[in-house]
Image 1 (cartoon, rainbow, N blue to C red):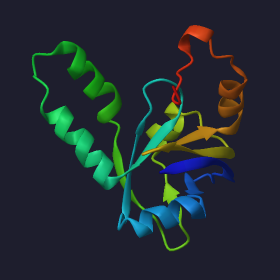
Image 2 (cartoon, rainbow, N blue to C red):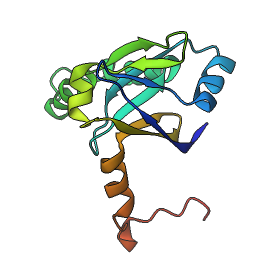
Image 3 (cartoon, helix red, strand yellow):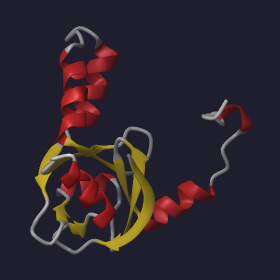
Image 4 (cartoon, one colour):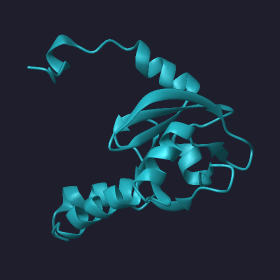
Length: 143
């Protein structure tokens, strides 16, 4: 399970360090690669271990090619996917299309989201965290 928030920077080439805690979890699970995609609900890059990507891929492949809603989602979010390796310094190269989508500039934030990780531009992340969650949208995970 990925959790926590980690501030990093991204260079002009699109390289940013994956937090050590996340690298350790991936290594312990035998996950040498991650897959990056657009996140469908806000301007962020979603990063997931290869095994989580494979589960998602099975679901995508099971959809009907005649299901317009599903195909539109596949085109928008899953066609942007990029499989990436961590370099020897634990850095990830974020492709330009994903950097543009997530508005990534110099300061970025990695956020653990359970089975996946999200990468935000710091200003976008801070704006997201300032937003109130309407009472009807609050989910009670403990109830």
